[in-house]
Amino acid sequence: MSDKLWIFDTTLRDGEQVPGCQLNTQEKIIVAKALEDLGVDIIEAGFPISSPGDFNSVVEISKAVSNPIICALSRAVEKDIEVAAQALKFAKKGRIHTGIGVSPYHIQFKLRSTPEEIIRRGVAAVKFAKQFVEDVEFYAEDAGRSEPDFLCKIIEEVIKAGATVVNIPDTTGYCLPEQYGGIIADLKNRVSNIDKAIIATHCHNDLGMATANTVAGVQHGARQVEVTINGIGERAGNTSMEEVVMAIKCHKSIPVHTSIDTPKIYKTSRLVSKLMNMPVQPNKAIVGRNAFAHSSGIHQDGVLKHRENYEIIDPKEVGVEESSIVLTARSGRAALKHHLDALGVELEGEELRKVYEEFLLLADSKRDIGRKDLLELVGKYLDESNFIELEKVTYSSNGEINATVQLKIGDQSLEATQTGVGPVDAVLKAIETLVQPQVDLEEFLIQAMTHGSNDVAKVHMRVIKSDKPYYGFASHEDIVLASAFAFVDALNKIPVKEYATA
Ligand code: KIV
Ligand code: ZN
Image (cartoon, rainbow, N blue to C red):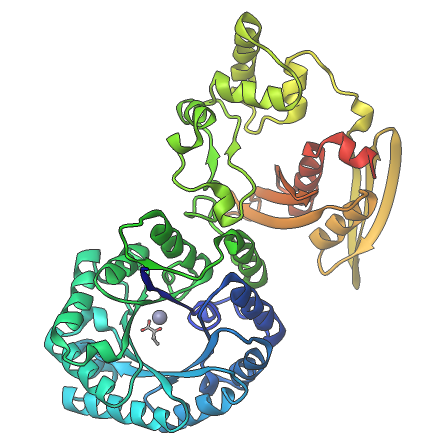
């Protein structure tokens, strides 16, 4: 049996420090419960001394969550540690995470201290924390840029003082994988009592190395990884949980296993993204919208012949329904055939070749080729009466913000008015009211194309209907109209029978 790799999630502490990502206590509880459901071993719930809100969140998360260890951060300061201990009083299993800077930069320029004094303060903090909880983790801040002899010394002393976990952060994301792995190997080889504690990795992503460094740390003996969902965190972020967990799952040569229920990864990623207002970049490994989307002809052909030709992970393993074959001007005949088959149109040989030529012409002029375009290409015009058209959108904000939308659904023209927190919200709600049965709007991303005030807004949406995702895209100078068009675009990709059976 391989070793257990402890998954320490710091989305609610290091992740939540990101400007604009702050959550209230209720939202943090939702995330904490999702992390528990995902199988996380330790949840770092906050830094209690930093604010009454953080204190309260640690208290409430401790009450709401049963299985994971709840961890509270503190500096190597008695008051911090006392407050962390108070915040943990309802935790079924509580851990205090205390520590101090150990690099020459931190010792000299931040703490204006000496190496001896830093060891004394680190040891005192661990001993003080031990009065409150058995489980004390020590972080050696900026260990990535520390002197190896000094790092070994302080780690040995804090373990003597009772530290159960020793965290070796690459706080500034400076290390290369070989260096970071070397630091962990050094501790394993040179610290006489290292077997009495678990070594933890905590890597930042300033050079895009966080996942590689974390994996290197594990390969050299670390058995806890400190990670966040979607890799959110200070500056360029922390190590992303989904990347490390899947790297370990894919590479059986790394002798560890995790308790993460991987099919829950995708929905947890989307939950965190939505609550923290932090879009996931489309090409993000594992959870980006394009992570399982194939657009070039050679790849599409390969994937359709045998998925593993171009995919190392079955999307279902991380909770993504299926790989997608996106139709673009670079798509091949196999991809076109795949989409036509799905629409019940079976073409072969010369017929397929002709439609493919027309398809390429269309794809050159149109970015997103949908179902309606394909059916038009093969001469099977759809019964237009079944489609949803946006006929009118008006919105006003005299005190209350409301919007009126007129849709043509089939041969009926329907109108609805809704209020919202903003015009986009009001318009989308009005559309939702008219479309029955309702769909679940799961992802909504607005991007500016340039930087001027006359900017074009590009909207991407993902809606769920009967457990299947459908995507809508639109761009317009008016952000409200761009959102409305993107929503209607997604709705038009849902098979008409889904509406008819309502
Ligand atoms: O990056 C870091 O060093 C930290 C510590 C406080 C653990 O987040
Ligand atoms: Zn950090």
